[in-house]
Length: 442
Ligand code: ZN
Ligand code: ZN
Image (cartoon, rainbow, N blue to C red; front, side, top):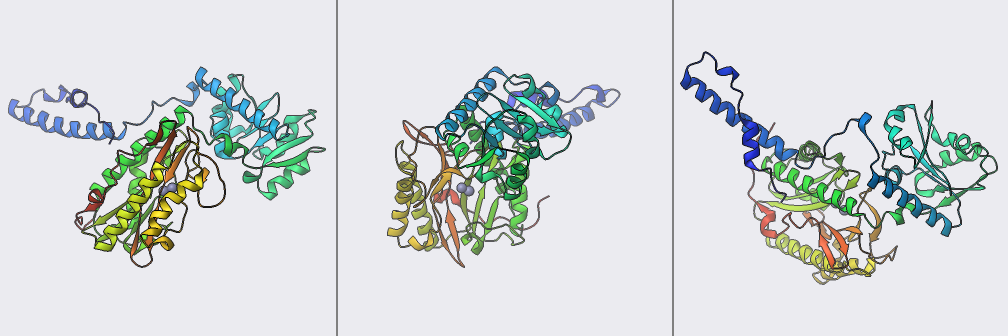
């Protein structure tokens, strides 16, 4: 678990102000001071714990692109141009929201990036003018702001007389309608769908990206701890999900990486269960949740038993844990993604539950919660490389009874797999919890 703020600092900040003591009996004042002190101390401790992972806030008007960020942007623009070169496409219109943020560092809300061999242009509208000023000042981008949204139609005026001949478009991030509108506005320019170029560049994470994932894991772990401590029988799955989201955001998460899955009892056999009005009760409680920090996602699953599980559920948990360990151990540089999946699948099949593991063993994790490389039986056969961050999440699901999934986030390194979420207990002993009291929390 993450380290906590030192008590001495909390106490120092928790000292009550003295002004209120004037004219009051000494004993009363001392009691008042003590009770206020404890109250303030407790409140500050809570705030300190919650804001441990927040970054200092900077007003938008004070934002600057620092030297390190500028170097990273330059490197990423260079990588895009090199990749375009190898595909013989001279330019690319980047429309994927997370791709825009990866490339430029700005939010990709209604902002696109046009990359040619000599220019990089952020195309947006008046709503983002102030926010994008630092990008205009840093010298790495031209920023083209239009009065009205609809940036794709503005690509033609940005290009002006520039004869690019072919414009690459992201097949995964452009609707047919948008493509038709773009084609109509670009006279004499051929649109060339580009597949997976940005996704490939994003597979290996920078140290800063890994650090953001680590912080997201710390935030979601602390959020889980608080949520579990306030769990009550009778709370609904939806209320538990809402609490998780609240606890992550209060600790500095930009948001949840995805809608949390909170599945109680038999609902735990539904792999992507949508939490609803089902009440939490004795039995299985599966929670799959994640935070987003600085654009990067974390994604973990823990399965709990409220009350003692029966022998079959214990056995299932142990097999899933064993399968997860095997797949994590297989996350070595150079190993094919399908081999990682096979390492877990063989164990689950040998235990007799092969038909009850109906999804791939994991996926790449980054700016999208599901991104390349995908660790499945079929599909891509990427070899793992240093800097990739992947989830490992085998599961066994028994319709009508429930299910068990354990998911951790793994950084692939030259020295072997590094489990970024190792601090969050996933042992069977830790999964078995007393049945919480009934009643409502706030
Ligand atoms: Zn998950
Ligand atoms: Zn996942």
